Length: 315
Ligand code: UDP
Ligand code: MG
Image (cartoon, rainbow, N blue to C red; front, side, top):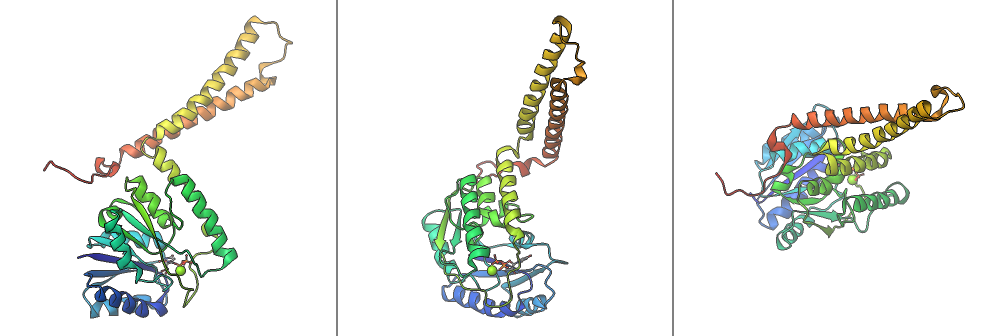
C-alpha cells in the first residue's frame, strides 16, 4: 500500500462525509493505493457513528475511537501505530487543509529524498490577533531552538516516510512539534510545501489561547530532551557541581577566617556567607539526586527504545 492517511477528529460530524469523499476521490484519481484511519478523539456529536458507517462500506477506511477526549497528539499516535502504508499523511478533519496537496507532497518527498514534508499555510484564513500573530512568534521560537528551517510547524497536513512516524512518540501536546520530534530521532531531511488553506467551514477551533503558553513550555522540554534526554546526569550533575563548589568556597572562607584571623566577633550564623554556603550545598545535593533519578528512569527503558536503527547488514 502506498499511503496511510491519519485523520484525528473531535466533534467534526458535519465535515466527515464531505472530507471522506474529497480524500477518496483525490487519491483514486491519482491511482494511489491508500487507507484512511479516522481517530475519534472522544467526540460526543455522533462522529463515531459516521466513521463506523464509512468503515462498513469500504474496506480501506478504518476507525479508532477513544473513551474520552485525550487530545490530538494521542489521536495521531494511535493512528500512527496502525499505519500500513509506505508513506503516511496527516490531515485535519475540519476541511481547512486540502487533500489535493497530498499527491504533490508525496512526489516532492520522493524527488528531494526527504524524511518528512510539512505544509505551510502561507496565506492563512484565521483570525489575525488570536492566531496569525502568536503563531508567527511561536514558529520563530521553534525555528531558532530546533534549527529546522520551516515556517509552519503546526500545519495539520504533513507527509512522512513510514519509518519516521514509527520512530516517534507523539504525546501530551507534542503534535505541534512533530518535525522536531523527527529531527530528535535523526530524521533531519525536512522540507515544506505551500498549501491552500480555507476558513473553517463547520464548528469552531478545538484549541483555546492556552495553546501558546503550552507550546512554549513544550519547546523548552524538547530542547532539554534533545540535549540531555539520554544523559540527564550531565545536566543536573554540572549544575550541582557548580552549586556545591560555591558552597565549599564559602564554607572554607568562613572557616579559615574564624580559626586563623581575628574577626569582629560576629557569630558565623550572623554572616551572609554562611547562608550562601548552606543553600548552595543543599541545592547542589538536590540537583545530584535529580540527576541520579533521571539516570534510573533512563536505565529502566529497554535498550531498543534508546536509539533508532535505519539499516542493518546482520541477521
Ligand atoms: N482535534 C482532536 N482532538 C482535540 C482537538 C482537536 O482530534 O482534542 C482535531 C480536530 O478535530 C481537527 C484537528 O485536530 O481535526 C485540528 O483542530 P482544530 O481545527 O480545532 O485546530 P486549529 O485549526 O484551530 O489549529
Ligand atoms: Mg482547523
